[in-house]
Image 1 (cartoon, rainbow, N blue to C red):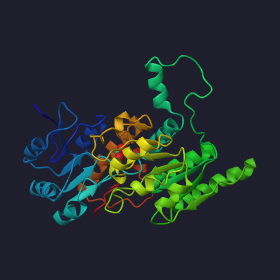
Image 2: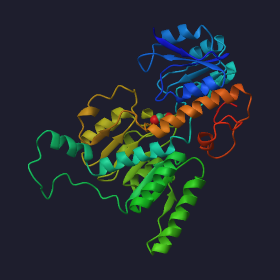
Image 3: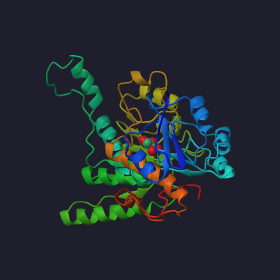
Image 4: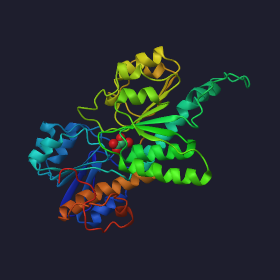
Length: 367
Ligand code: DGY
């Protein structure tokens, strides 16, 4: 048996994967839904999903690894699906226009994963700066024969310059944490003025004033290349779209400063991975910290062999806290849309975590 079905509510929801807790199932059941999700594996074959969907469903929960193109959206529509909710903030796997055309709403889970993803970007930055993974394999492989003055020298982050490409919620949170921890100046590249980043730096500088330390800068870069040329740590937080696909290619990479670090926790396609591998092979002084890949889960040939790359398996939101909260938001998106509630207009959707009875839909992008 491939599927588990729980509850006997009059509305139904089907998830393409089991999730990290069971709380979401209880929320649906309490709200008159029947819930169906795969029994064993986390994911399920597409053909099995569409076979199960023939029974009909009001809502579908999707993972970011599932591609929803025009044809797949059409199948949802034919099955009577009214809302597709991604268990992620990024929705680059969904053709939003096709969903709009079919009258299917698309939901996502912003905000609740901001801290988790910003903390992971910090983890990657520290790991790159201090050669953590390289040191770990060195010890495990029995190569550590004693302290040495020049063993695995890294870069001190204190007082260095941090570049943020796409200072949205996650980029801003990362920048503020890094600036507070390491007194890092910041450069950003953004399509619109990052008000929150700018005001957070003003607050940090009030604190610096009280401590009698030099104020930190938060400056706009006019191009990605300008930012790369002036930063010691380059971090990427943009969402993936036609403009950001391969935003970082050969020219951008070759502009990296000596000993600099590049971090990507957004989407793999933002960096041309072939060019990145060539660059890391040639420039052993630079380090890349990657949580995402161009053809996930497949990695560009030779990437795994590079000691100057720190590689994680797309763990951005992988904390117990974030995943539980993503499950609550996913469920409330579908349930509250069914109830006909209006869209929440507050800046943060965290209030839904403490009060699951708020009469609003937390986050639908197609309203
Ligand atoms: C997202 O939610 O888009 C993240 O990539 C998850 O880690």
